[in-house]
Amino acid sequence: MMMTNLFSAFDPSSSFSFPLNWISSLIFILCLIPIFWIIPTKPFILINMAVSKLHSEFKTLLGPTSFSGSSLPFIALFTFILVNNFLGLFPYVFTASSHMALTLTLSLPLWLSFMMYGWVNHTKHMFAHLVPQSTPGALMPFMVLIESISNIIRPLTLAVRLMANMVAGHLLMTLLGNQTSAASGILLMGLLSTQILLLTLESAVAVIQSYVFAVLSTLYASEITSH
Image (cartoon, rainbow, N blue to C red):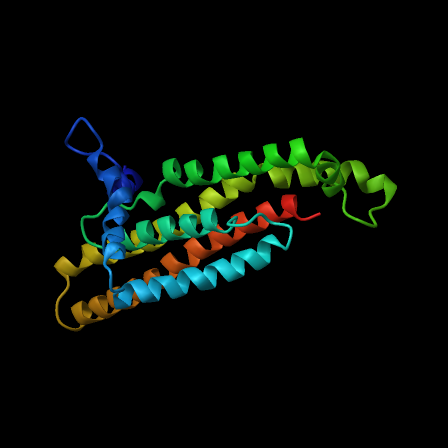
């Protein structure tokens, strides 16, 4: 019962028949409005620099054989996860990236598209990838089994990694926030200082986890396209 109440803060339920709190994952569309100004603003210049940096890095990870513009879906994925992670740090804003319903929806179609493209267009390469080089003949069946299992659980690990990191920080901030109402004096100041430090840490985690998700997705794609 205690654990149910503890995690109820992450329950995506609402008082309406339609779960309106999931709309928070689309609020980032409002950030696109300043792009249409004739004179670029300073935030837009900063975003443009970050996108250019991500494009060059993802292009390097995908390899020289990648298609033109192949890094754009991963940049969009990074931006979508980053905005959702940051929105969850604001009070009374639903954190969509802390639920498997969103994280698995992002990782599973990506993995399926990579697998379908690889097995249809590069079948020999996909079979060769199951057995690393210099593997003894006696270990080949076991290596095929291990590589197959590690490949199958990739979308699950991507989804769980993002969800668990977001839930862990938000849960700790929720627990400390519930104690501030009963605290006073030095204890209250300590709790507030800890909350500020946790908020700073969660801001860094929001960036890191979105970057890790996008980079791992890029690496999974590069394993198929580069051969």
